[in-house]
Length: 591
Image (cartoon, rainbow, N blue to C red; front, side, top):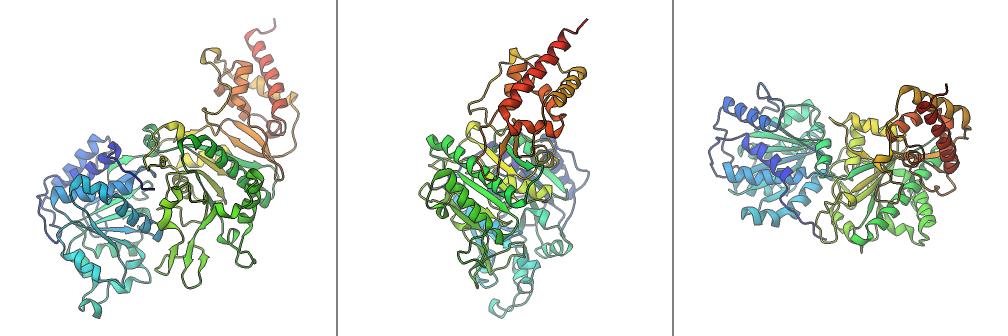
């Protein structure tokens, strides 16, 4: 499959924000970038004009960093195409001002490979728009001849480089005179063309050593692209999570929180894996008419839980459990064909390794460069396991399920992981599917629904659209709006909570899968029971609004509310009767 690209307004806005910040800079083409000819006052006025038209706070001054006076921040929600946006920005800066030397700095191999693939995939698209192609390459200290053409060619030239290549163990090579490079230092050749630096995920490049090393490039300007900036400089464009969801640019999120009052870690993970398989198969069934290939991504706590070289077959616990649950759900006799692990591989040993260690040239990802193949129905792999190699810098438009088989991550990590599945789906012809009905990401987490959503929302300037885990397109009870009444006085709510806690029996602890719609039962050794739209069915039976009912249910004693998971139908019947009685008393109080 070949991905197809189209001009999109939100990306065009991001491009214009950067390019217009340099308004007044004369067009000068050549083998090196012309230095800035407009003064600081004009630059600041341009930045403030861009900020004003986007309703962003106006900066009082330009904020320098890494030896460069011009540092522009672009905030774009994950999945909205920031790589495309900065590639197009490169073409626009060259067309408008003549700048043709760009260095893209990335914090790791996964992002580096993704950027490289994006240049290759968009080449024809931009050729059609601008009548030229960008020459791009990945910096490697063993191939310094690429720097010669980069420095001398007058066209658009882009170098992609890992920050470890100039800050890590390999940093001496770029700062040392080389006999095989005419006794020159590679960094001096790069600095001589005054490149525009583009930092992809700059929040990982804020250390003193990294900023000092960036200064050695003598950049004309620094452009920073991220969804999660840690340090604010001159922000010229913002497309945050709320706006991205409101404009239909990313998938909606449905959260399934798998919890239990008493559980072993092993049993909890099995329930999660079973839930992921179930959600995946549901998505496949729903999207089959559109011929969309569905992928699911598991984030795990240790590589050995998936690939265990101490065992004869090399399978870790998660791989074994997955194959058991997949076979249980599908009857397939070849479950090993449908899942793979995405981890760094050491070329010397051929074994997967923990990617938390610093990236270097001896480590590479198993399947990163073949990710388009995953979109083909002919490729059997549909379930992907990763530790953290895919946390940022990798995404695939057809990831519809993400399962968190771990605990304790920061909210930044949580958002990055969810972001791997936010990109809008593509069909068999490579075109984006913009219909919201076809774009929903299911996130399965060992946290409660409420805790996970609260943690996710802490990372967003405004709450994202986190939806009912049961899609409204699936069969459910639809309550006519005119049949609902708003009777949410404190007295009624208190009366309902007291009556339910008193009259409904407490249930034994169970594994529960909680979504925005309610809770359903699951056991480590049994399949999950039928899903009920808890709020919808109670609203139908009682005539109260979902909001009022949600307030009542969240105030119940946990052991009473657990009765829904234990026996959903009995709980709904009893709760409906109790609430209806209390509502009647509230409307027609006894004399």
